[in-house]
Image 1 (cartoon, rainbow, N blue to C red):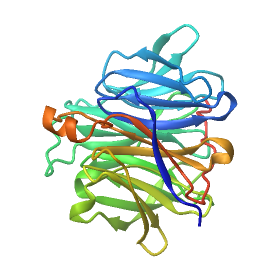
Image 2 (spheres, one colour):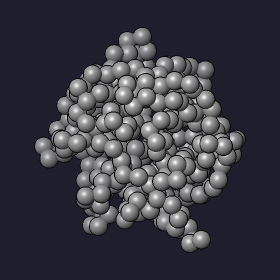
Image 3 (cartoon, helix red, strand yellow):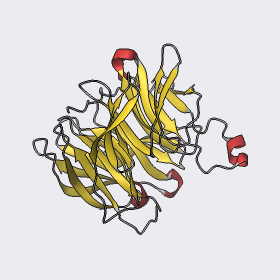
Image 4 (cartoon, helix red, strand yellow):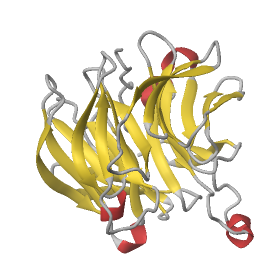
Length: 297
């Protein structure tokens, strides 16, 4: 087994770094800073970072097949034209009955729909104001799941029959039967519940062996979980307590990129964790990820 190495590769700190996506053609990592209200692209070859500011808190970003990106920002889906540096509304999400919510994590499904979930701004453990929506290629929006505490990491099994989903304030990673024709979810079941010292389950991704990599906020780690058995297979410690999300990238998708946050940390905590808010690259895991899907609309 090769030795695992964790290195800080993006030193520009994010208040809440999230939604990392590897872009193979440019060897870039795409990500957002939710509280910093920006979408960024880090070029791994030149180490340059290019960012575009967003109007509201931006939960996630995904590539778009026709070029540019799609973001889940505030209470809308929006298109980002990187060349023109412009952001235009794709579809507002009507949430009048739950006004104090915002978009959080999101990802494109194997059929090219952009799934993104919402969360209550108050982040109260007893509130279930969050939901999961999908932006279809025709720009219409479907609510796929309701009564969520804090919608977070999501991904699909390699055979496209299962949808995996994290509800952070319920401390759960769950699975659903997933219908690729309709995008519908059914047969909800528990896969994993984080233990006390593991913190809040946050963003996640899948590897080529069908195992899930789950970032743990306030846990300073990424867990590898077998969704078939619900067992934790591996723990990778990250030198930032507020570990937020992860994705595979780099040459043949064998590197794991991990984002983090420094939001709500005092000077003392920042002194103890100088790399809080940075983005890390984990090498030597001995597994690979799969390329991300792009939004088809």
